[in-house]
Image 1 (tube, protein in one colour):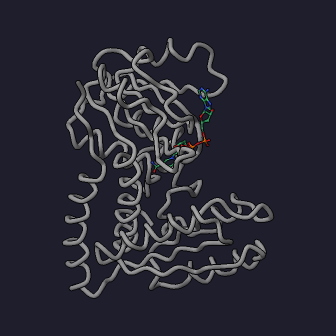
Image 2: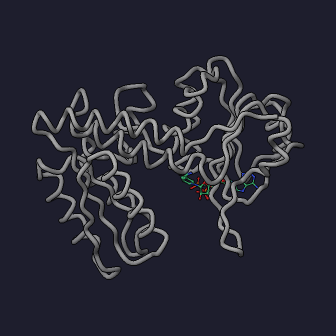
Length: 283
Ligand code: NAD
């Protein structure tokens, strides 16, 4: 049965390394600083933001949170972002999504200076990712590639099948797998005969948001399965998009939920913030 790739343990190791890196920067007089903006009081968003602050603290990155009321106008938000863009003590800017309906996410994302875009959502940084230039990689996809590499799992030449095509997970993780020379197939809600594709996957990345939709019957013997899903069940517990107990009987490697991709996402945000403090090459 499968080897479990524990994202929590891997995050811990990476954070130890980053702590040393931040220490060196601090001795040179440079303390990486992340500013997070949260609009409104969505409890899930608040908890994500607390997690990001706590992780920043752990590695010595300084951070602050700008909490704005749900009634904030798009113009007011853009004004604040402009001020942060011009503030040389702020290295990373993150606007917690989702935003209230009257604010257009695209306008907010493009207003962030690409050299401070630690979420990697700015179209300029997405373009750089596509052409393989140095950039801020979106955190969840970067975390997935880091997990695969931590186990020396071969990506080159393998058939990677991505379930889901969101802008934050599915699409970019497919691009990063392609950059690593995988042959990539994307599946989504309009895909006919999903199983015909999942059965071919050497590496299957599942980012659907449907509890335990994927099980052993979808998988090829020896497949590597990365479960991105975070679904809260009625009893309050968390589960992924993969039926872990069934899938692990046929996979070679599998990620759990919780303690899988989730912790890696925040860890990659820290990595991007340190990178922003150092300065992105080419900017
Ligand atoms: P999303 O809702 O934006 O996208 C879901 C995708 O699944 C869509 O592209 C859709 O086409 C596809 N889909 C839906 N039903 C399908 C079906 N029956 N067959 C095939 N494809 C289908 O979701 P998202 O933002 O990409 O997130 C996906 C999951 O990952 C969610 O559970 C989310 O909570 C989780 N997530 C986890 C992290 C993390 O850090 N681990 C980060 C982001 C998202």
